[in-house]
Image 1 (tube, one colour):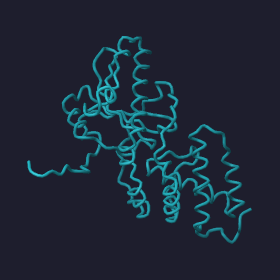
Image 2 (cartoon, rainbow, N blue to C red):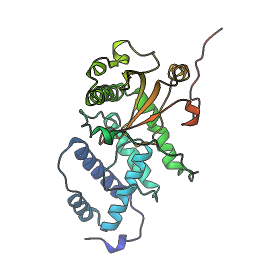
Image 3 (cartoon, helix red, strand yellow):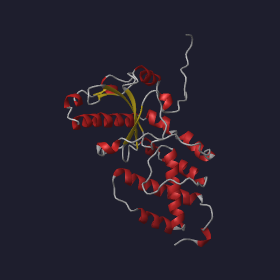
Image 4 (cartoon, one colour):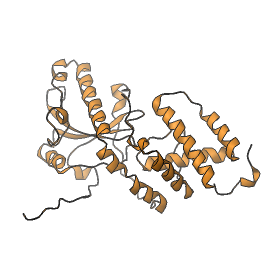
Length: 278
């Protein structure tokens, strides 16, 4: 039962810690395919902290909104809402700092949907957004989703393998087993540096050079491109594509990005090579 004295008052750290921990417990069950009942979790939490059902549900949606900005999966049904209480950022920071493995999660063989469901349109350019609250901006800097996905080689390889199998499946469904057998996982067979990860084909036999970028986050999660990849996109624009694999931990979806890249995405330099001499 709700504590009437708490209605309309800011959540305290112990309450925020409790709901964040409970949210991640449900999220882990969701990602692992284990049964759980959201209403039971909410009821137990309400009894523990004395908050109303509406307040608890809204806070769950706040947490989803933060995870969305961090390039992480969130619980279906708790659609992100961004009217944040600033203290939620610190509570999520505390939890992720104590449980860093959550950030590096690699799905155990995500199930592929029907091939006509996997490919989706690229995100449309967003209208100018209000600036992020400073607490959220600091959290995104600390747990940078772009850098995190980039260095998570296990996630990257899992995404590449998913695409290799998908391309073979698409060609087989098109009655081109001859081409399906020629699909190559270039990044594994030849190593990085080619400017693309997977060599595939369209049904006519035309080569397709696929650079796979994988995230557990949503479609708008940014990603890194290397100089090699950008050069290859300019050298072979008709054949080269980014396959942006997103929602990988829950329901993998792909949109493509075609050259010229400047027409499709905002490119911003992030690092420079430092050397001595020429």
